[in-house]
Length: 141
Image (cartoon, rainbow, N blue to C red; front, side, top):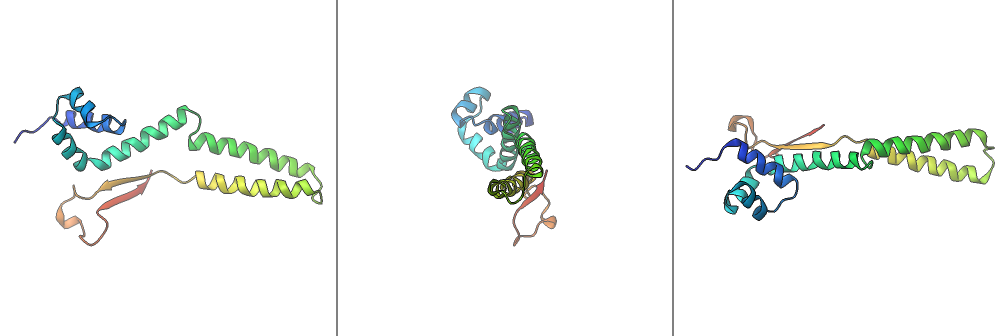
């Protein structure tokens, strides 16, 4: 069997997660496209997980990460709460502020969900898997 070094597979996973095409990866690491396609099938969970983590890091760098958005929403929510505390609750704009506060709170809760990662159970021994169940393990990071 023509086995490739694990480091080569790891490099494939990294490049594929970055969105490289099979043709470009093939030229970069010197592995045929059919082999890369087979690796893609075998390691698709690793590629997906790494892609999700890289997108999260990119979002953080661009200040649009969940953390940055939650911080901004929290800041806006605090400013609205402070404004509401200074206003007469009979004032019409106050109702608008309450609606805005509720919307911002819902958005903050939605953004606060943890990222979900997936791993295939195909690497587990047969006695540890159940054929009629989902063949993936899901967990929150």
